[in-house]
Picture 1 (spheres, rainbow, N blue to C red):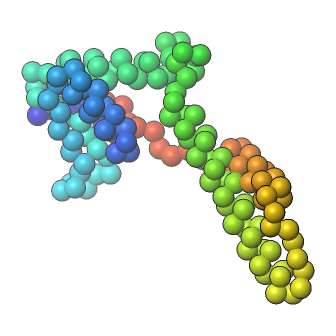
Picture 2: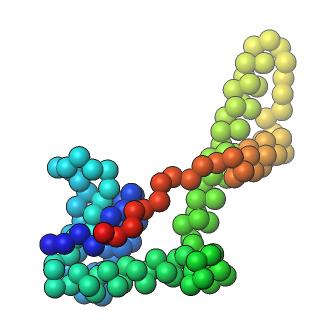
Length: 144
């Protein structure tokens, strides 16, 4: 078995595995459980290594676009999902903070509204702040 790619996340590795299995390539995921690595390796038999590398490189070109940028057809769905998660995370953190401050102020007799409109505005602002200042995780490493 030869390692044809390594990924930082389990989700990326499973997508690659599904693509290879759809092309009738025998695939083994090595999650580094018995090694001192944090990556997940895609391993295939030697006779199918070239085909597997070709399939995975075609996938990477499709995601990143043919001109190296994010074109209309090549826009990466992963980036859109990351943006959505950053928005939701930022909004949730701001809502949590608003409710926490509201409960502390309530002890002192100061009441702030917990109705849908203020909560929605707080979520929106928090989501936008999350998008602007959010950080993305590590990218998958290139196939070796």
